[in-house]
Length: 143
Image 1 (cartoon, rainbow, N blue to C red):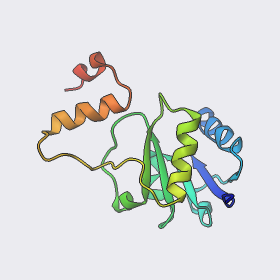
Image 2: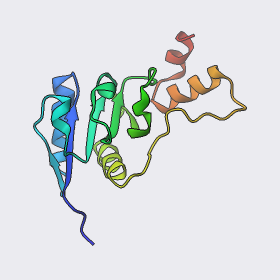
Image 3: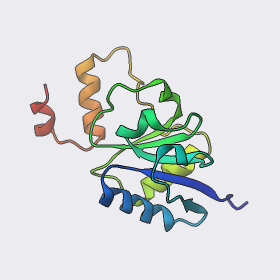
């Protein structure tokens, strides 16, 4: 069964990164990338690929794929809209595309606040940094 046309908006403050995201998504059959510039223009889209900066600005109900440099900052009530949290530094095209399709299907690729109760805050922080691609030297510098 063929997938229906998926409408995606991309918002990122870094123009080069934003162009890269749009290019990767345009190469995927069945994805239409919007040329919107302002978050309110994303109404009618299925998914938005955004940087952390845009989390609080996105229309309610829109599924979000967040690309970030590090651990997520304090998030807003829109946490439930976040379907995936992807690391910018190591992001591959196939990961981006898979996360967008999963978000459109209503799946949650990464849970930002999920922690195991038997781990302390530092352990959770270290695990998140490892998952984001930081090496042990970088992790040891951060507190």
